[in-house]
Amino acid sequence: MTERFPPKLLDLAPVAVILHDRDAYVVEANEEACRSLGYTRDELVGKHVRELVEGMDPDHVARMQEHVRTRGSATYRAIHRRKDGTTFPVETHLALVRGEGPVRVVAFVRDASENEQARAALAASEERYRLLLDLLPDGVVTYDAQGRITFVNAAGVQAIGASRPEDVIGLSVLDRVHAEQRASVAERMSRTLQGERGPTLVQRLLRLDGREIWAETRAAPLAGGSVIAVIRDVTERRLADEDRGKLMERLRQAEKIEALGTLAGGVAHDFNNVLAAILGHAAALADELPPGSVGREDAEHIAAAARRAKGVVQQILAFARRRPSEAAPVDVSACIQEDLALVRAATPANVEIAVRAAPDAGAVQADPTQLHQVLLNLAANARDAMALRGGVLAIAVERASVPGPDAPAGLAPGSYVRLSVADTGHGMDEATRARAFEPYFTTKPVGAGSGLGLSVVHGIAAALGGAVSLESAAGEGTRVDVWLPRLDAPAPATAEAPARAVAQARRRVLLVDDDPPVARALSRMLASLGYEVTTDDTAEAALERFRAAPEAFDAVLTDQTLPRMGGDELTLALLAIRPGLPVLICTGYSARLDEAEARAIGARALLPKPLDLAELAAALSAAIGTR
Image (cartoon, rainbow, N blue to C red):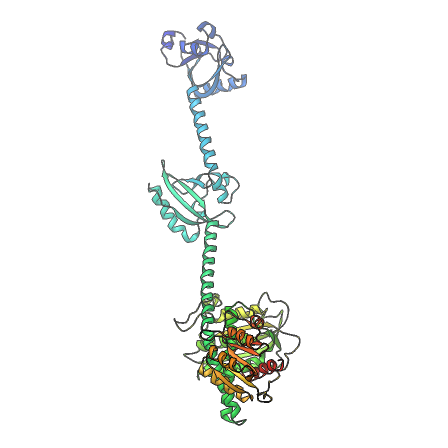
């Protein structure tokens, strides 16, 4: 053997070379083998490989020898043990040598300490890299050219709704993208795989549990045809942005409503003065005309319309001041009958009006003005829906019960009054129907509608403990049902106030109002009640007149909004001259004076304009009678 492998030849090899026989005993070794193991050649020859290899048992040796004999060679890693007992890693290649003489196995042994150190350093680096990625709050994934996930960090596992990385590795990236964005994401992935660094995108991703999340993603190409992507879950931020947007929209709507309230307060005084003149002259005219005459009926209709307008203004002012309406038992059928004249007057001739109001429908606890608003808004919507082709406007009032087949969801069980308004107009499609109750939403052209009609109806019904249901389809008309809780007891009969309450002994009233039509109307009303009336148009003139003759008047009726000196200031000045004087203050609208404040300064009452004859008679009679 030594002739085939002379020691000097073996010593030229850069690695350790060891020859052993078929029983694994060393028969020759070169200088590198001796140096690396710490033996002399004589000490090394004759040793069994088990003495040189850590942890190699006889069975292992036998399997290795058999492998070499059958296949001619083998390569393995092992741990060699030096003479001093220390160990070091090696990579060994075995080859079978046949020829003359005994069969030998030659082992080429390379010290693998540096490789092991490099592998250990690489493993440590990879572990640090993985720990670093797992500490990141954002998800990190890599995927191959087929779009299959090859790596995912802890945040990525959590974002995708998995419990461990193994549940994610191998999944298709596109399967985790919402169907609406899948095509655009596929195109972006292709460009990234071609080497293009992508921008930050906002995508809708699907978790393994099916839940949808919003994520910011950014991807960059890696060597070897793969891509790394960073995923940041922004679902909460997006929801917060949406909530903030909704809050801002509500704020804008609140500002609109506040502006409406300010506008309402600003115009209410002037509008009520106009109504006061209309109502006063209409009442006076009706009083002078024969009962049953057409002229008297017309005057009474004018007065009724003015009173209805007064109620609407009061409702607007209650809304502007955020004060609750004054609710009382109201017979719904009777209330609706009162509105029919106004509905008919505002409805074109090509629209037929059909009314079915059950007398026993019952009463609800509400402000009558609210019910008028409900019907007039619904009738206006129905009228507009049939403006071009005409049709039928059907109004019905009836009793209903909850639960019931057509009752709105969420209503408490019980008895209800149902007001229904239906039309045969163009109807609504599904998208319009879904937004029908939104404030300011309208399908009418600019200037033709405010978008508040149905939202006002819905708000009134909800405030009264009821609900609104809507049925509509494009081309098939619309029906709106307003459900209001029914009272067990009927509404009390309305006692008609006397048309006049004639003053006894010709009482004298000082009237102060700077609006000539209003002053004339109130003067005529007072005269019709039997009072002697003296009129001044400024507080200063009235105060000078009163100071000259304090006992000349039995009462003072003054407007609150007067130039230079208001009605409250005039009241204080008059009472300073003559304490106990009955003073009544009228106002179309006052932001600085309410009923309690008026009584606190000594006024007997604060009367809202416009006044009708019965209200005026009762107020003066009560004030003068309690001097």
